[in-house]
Image (cartoon, rainbow, N blue to C red; front, side):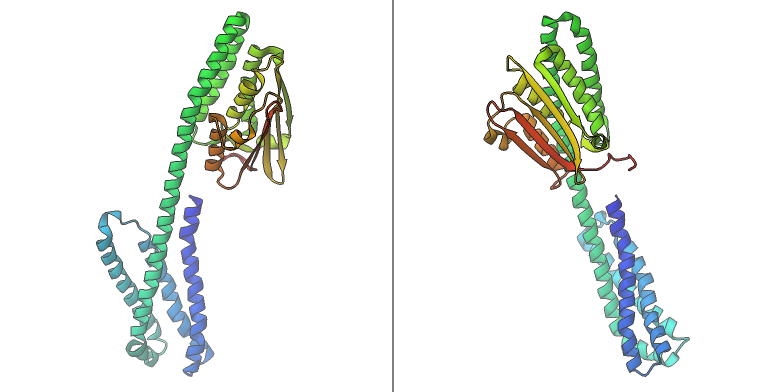
Length: 350
């Protein structure tokens, strides 16, 4: 919305600059006709000032949407408006000049008015074309934004059942092996579901890294109830990074992959590591495990729901402004490094 307002507000400023430039070009012309400096400047302003005022009116008129008119009717409307603009500008110049220098005003009416009318038509066409260009650009931007939001919702709709099924599977295993821990696990599960549901209903797609990590800790605590000492957790977190923004549920697929595919299949288990820091204004998050690893080429191609979902989320949230690096090899663990734009979530003061 701010970009839209900036675009619409820029035109009056541009009109004023063009008018001043035109006045500067007209002054030597009037000096060449024998007018003194004061009269030459006054004559130039008589042309420029009405142009700025009427140009602003034309801009307000041209920017109004006219989808219901059709192309032909819209062209007729703009044609009539262009003629009205040109005539009004010419008449305004004549009326301003008449009390100051009657002979010059009469000379303008018979000699300069035709060229002034042509200039008015050209200026209106430029104003209307610029307004249409801005409107088209806004529509394309809004369409892209709507499409991105729809795709993010589709990604989340795909991810949520997958996460829910896997978590319920963990609860089932835990209930069979340790019924005493099941009640605690169900409480953790409730915390997880509250976060997922809140993220799905929220109008803001970003949360603080601290909020996202609270969700991750609930998930890891639930998995630790199932895996016990086989799942170790290490954190290295820069306090400055915790207040920065990340897309909600961005880290969940990475954490789940690390636990389920890297650590859980090994009899000896493994350690999950999570690090976050601020580097050169960017938020850097690293998710790693020392588990069984994977084929690096398959990961580069985005095999699997988790990595492909994270990649697509980054493309939609931060097009061209984020990086994702995967480091892995069979038997050598798995690490993902995310570099995101460092900023606070929407609605939070800096």
